[in-house]
Image (cartoon, rainbow, N blue to C red; front, side, top):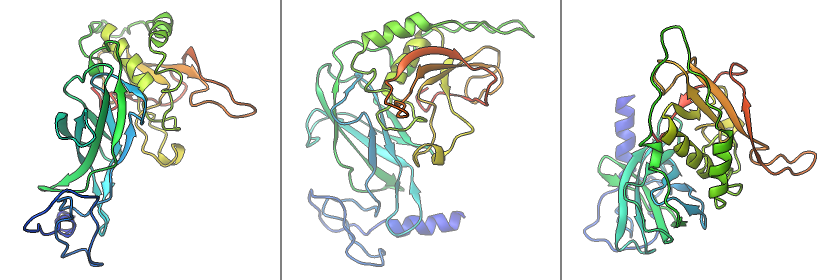
Length: 306
């Protein structure tokens, strides 16, 4: 397997030309894909363009949002390229970048990059991504854009909160009822709800509204997290990898670690008609607080954010 992957990586990397100038996406010059020089844009990795997912174009996002993209693939070999480089700028030519970094997708998952530098509030922000492998890099994606919120968000990833101490052996913590708080936080961000509770049209991917609510919950207690929905797969999610149920939250009630916890957790559904029920008539999503602990398998996850 290691030998095959090494051969595949070599096949993806084109020979670097003596000089290159800026231009469009890479375009192979031969059918065999083995002797292609650097593309006009300088890329040396023969890969497809990454697909940008969130924030969706024209949406409002936090000052330091999570950028979500799909892993890309090799053009001439069956190989997923799960490491992407992200660039953020206030200009579409990316002459001056306000943030840059790489992120790698978990097996079968999406690439989530946490912007490290808070962007200016009320500013139009442009972003893009490209695949990287062994020092080579693919063509840049199309350019995404969003507007940063004018309100101060909680720390990215829900950091800075307290944590309720573990219960005595053989006991469990009670489930805090956060109905009123979630309603208040939702009302404070009309840009996120309902428009940003299902921007990709699938149920098992976390979304900007849910991320905001989870971040606020984790300011209160870092035992809060997402449900990885372990019984669901891409066939249940429009072909997309399952990240987390977009309308559910979990609370760790015991002494087990958070990530991957399946036993010591309460499960709560925060929405009815998540993504909008269409039958027998369209129904808009609305807030709820339905505890479904023990009704189905669950697994605590940070959704790649914490």
